[in-house]
Length: 352
Image 1: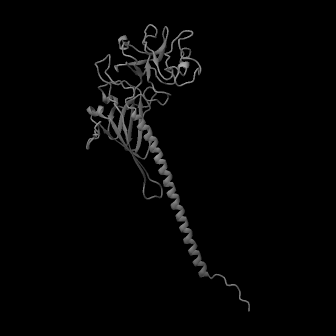
Image 2: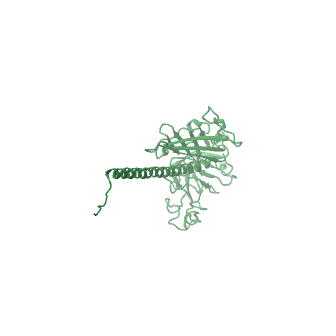
Image 3: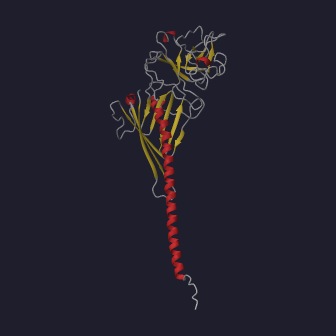
């Protein structure tokens, strides 16, 4: 008698199905957990990258606080000193002065004064200036000129086009590439660190008898300002603000180039500007889901803000030598119980 092959019973099939479901559920659970973990790693990497980009910009600019700031008193005023490099210092906001590049310019606005400021050769109220664009050549006229800006440039190769004596828009002109704006305030600082403040004319450069130069509005800078002082410089000082917006949990930045800089009115200096071609960038968000705080220290490493105060006193602003910056990023991910966070702290030292 031939015995037929015995199949699986219903009970055995049900047991096998339950085991398969359990195994598949476990595998799916592992896949979901792995996907969530991968997403957390990816998002944390993005947070670290965002934090690094923000802090690189912030620390780089804070290190430049005071760049271009004159070291002595006003030459044609009441002997007032220029405001401190950091003119606003709170636990959630910092404001400082620096000659920084602007969004629509290729370079900052600092230029060395040429040795010879001969008013007979320059346009009325003119300044002969040098910088990395025109090297040692301060835009003379004549055929042929004694030097050419395209041949003397420290940044551009020889003969990139026309010299500044032939073309006011040539890249080797001190006023080219958005360095200076018509109608803006500039500081003229002599070799002793004394300074005067002037406004550039609507067209910020002009042609004199033998040379071209920057042109400012009256009054005329006295000739004695340049005599015996060695080389000085011309600079455009901007006010830069970083702020933590507690309502929207964002870090904001505002860069203002609308001067002037009254040395006794820190309240006016501390007023950010609205967005505009003649004013500044306005508040621009840099990063969200963030908390930003500042602490300030003097040369002896003493904290200049102690609880419950939240602001460095005006008298202590010139004492600031180090800024400590704390940044926290936090983000809630879908289907995760714990928020993703990232904390970092950096310290920036500089000299007033």
